[in-house]
Amino acid sequence: MRSRSSVVGSLAVAGLLAALLAAGPAVGQTDDGPAPITPLTVQAIPEGSGAEAAVAAGGGGVWRASAGTGEEATVPPAAALPEGTTAPGQNGPGAESVIGADGRVRITPTTSAPSSRIGQLEFTQGGGFICTGWLIDPNTILSSGHCAYQPTATGDAIVESAVFSPGRDGGVDPFGGCNVLQAYSPEGWRVDGKFAADWSLMHLDCAIGDTVGWLGYFWKAGADGLKGLKVRVEGYPGDKPFGTQWKMNGTISASNKNMAYYTMDTFGGQSGSPVFVPNRGTCGPCGAAIHSYGVGLPGPGATRNAGPRITKSKFMLISDLADDNDPT
Image 1 (cartoon, rainbow, N blue to C red):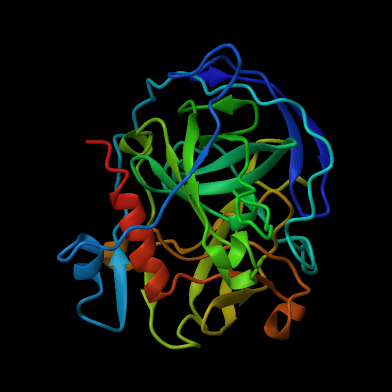
Image 2 (image 1 turned 30 degrees about the vertical axis):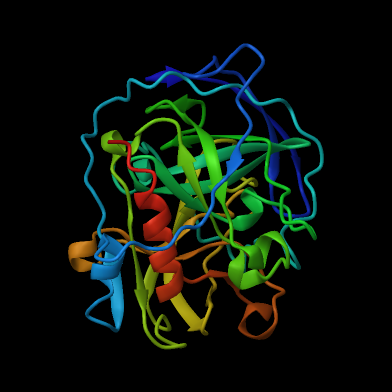
């Protein structure tokens, strides 16, 4: 188990938090700091792939969670990131919101599933900021698009570097951390800044999921197919002590073709948190959406927090990209 200290910076309009890290170099690093993150490219899904088989039955598809070993990781500490300044305005209208009385509950310790599979994501883009990410296989995480790219006309404004620390519990990283090597976000976010495209997938430099396990994810047919689903939002809000993980259970009160809406409380830093069913049959803890927004979006988002839902097309793409990062 590794102890560490962090200095909290200022909260951004976008709902991200600047932070100073104190950590040593990781594998493949030099004293100059982490290597730049490179963009991921999309390739055709191979015929007969796991993703294709998962949706063959129609009506919905499932990528199952994994248990992991639960043993302490042997990966080295991730590289230090510099102290940041005010975050760029990446998060659209409305930072993540506490709606009414705060219903969030702190999770400690964070060494058991599903909390050990959710981590704090610290990244640099001019300054240093935080988000949340969640493992979907040994070395791949999902997060918000604005935690990987700032929308521009060229679509190439990728973050400079990023570190993922699963199960962080205040000043302790029980499983160490991994550096992000590659990141993908759809053009709809990178270029157009569309809310429904505000998600990202990132490849890590170590297979930490073999230790802590990972969450499943699923898609369900129908524009209102997620309405009424009992879920949880879990991540690292910036209005709580730095590095502490918080959760709140609730219901998806509305959904449309691309988004899910809910009144579970969140705050800046929780962008990228899983919106997941804690126990969905054979899927285990299973994600339905990626939290990215507070109140202020059009329609149902005017009074609710929101995130892009995992649709069939996203499911196929995520599964394909994750498969391309097979550590074996």
